[in-house]
Length: 288
Picture 1 (cartoon, helix red, strand yellow):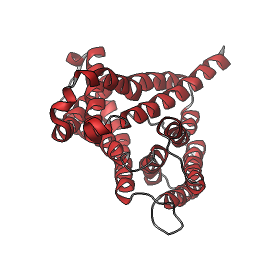
Picture 2 (cartoon, helix red, strand yellow; picture 1 turned 180 degrees about the horizontal axis):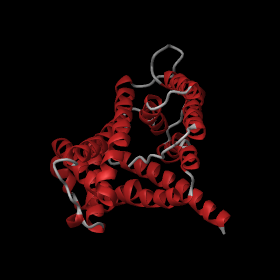
Picture 3 (cartoon, helix red, strand yellow; picture 1 turned 90 degrees about the vertical axis):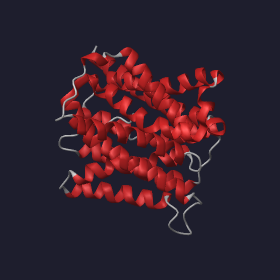
Picture 4 (cartoon, one colour; picture 1 turned 30 degrees about the horizontal axis):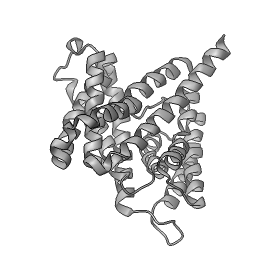
């Protein structure tokens, strides 16, 4: 029975990864219609509406003491999605996700004092160096897109730190409230870029599918995994995300990567898995 529960948890997490990266791939097809900013606004805005409809917003208690962490958490969530989508305009999905992993790895580095952790960070930095357009040996990559993906990673780091603080104050309402703040941050960018095009009835079913695949469904599946898997196992499995993203980009978007880029993504994955496996008190983090 226990083995069956573990297997279900692992499968749930893997399905969640494919859903999230599949949602990102589908969102990229909206770029010609509403731009990256518009796609991010639809994804974040509709996700917030879904969570509000499913949650109980009237039970949330916001005070002067706990609103700051919630505001930073929600803003970082919104900017993370916005910058990530803007990076996808010029950077393949797998590389964008690998670069975005710099945020969680930086948080792990800043909270660690052990030599082993610094070794894993060095491996991650080496992988990122081969992804960034720093040398002639590096395959061609748009510098602006790479910078946007790294910016999304910085926001992911803030999301982790302030998400823990907001979660301690708001409990089960944290994701819902943070999504509302994220929508307030991102939707104005979408309106400025796409305007009334965001309200096209023909876009709504597709945008709802993107929102469901990118937030509602994977978050629910990840919670199934979190309740059944040790944090170390969860974190190790999450390191597969860049490979899943690269695979979905190849299948759905026909984004092929150079062998050196695959090797660099593998280095980032290995560093992330190593950090999770050797951490003394690991805490899993979920990209929303």
